[in-house]
Length: 238
Image (cartoon, rainbow, N blue to C red; front, side, top):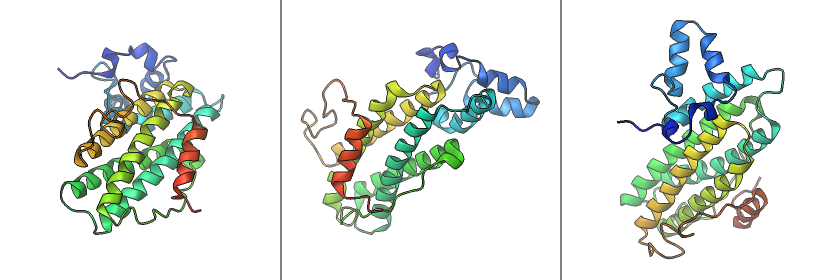
């Protein structure tokens, strides 16, 4: 049986103000069914993982319509989404350059191709939700880390774990339930990426460079800590 996120979090919590259902009820038959299907509500709950991420634009539209007199998505959530978008820009471009650079081969290339698709989808979806409030992509210089397989592997491991720390660090600050759910569906994927590259480079699974570098509990980092770490890489140049 398909497990839904509402097996863990009740639907009333995910759509606390009824905005999604209210929006759906106001739409004509086929359109309403399409919204509910995309959001995963028709089957009794918001589906976890990719389905939730794919439904985020519709969820955001529902929230915006319901709160159009109150500014839509809270400004603090917009700031968090733009913070996430900047990190996703970095990751997507890193993998794009690695995939097209010709230096990768074997399972490392397959991994990079898969992850590039995920990160590009994250970028596309976050931009759709933010609309005109989305920040533009910075310019990047990855300093040879995309043109050498060994450097790519070690950099990928650091970037993916940085993503986990970043999303986890913002989880308690997100005010919109739908956005929190979507962020959770991204952070789990980032963690799988980190574990995947750790396995490829045969890190000690129990060590600080392994599949669980922080032990039983991942460590949340603040926005300032993440930005400082990214700045130190020198990857963002403009």
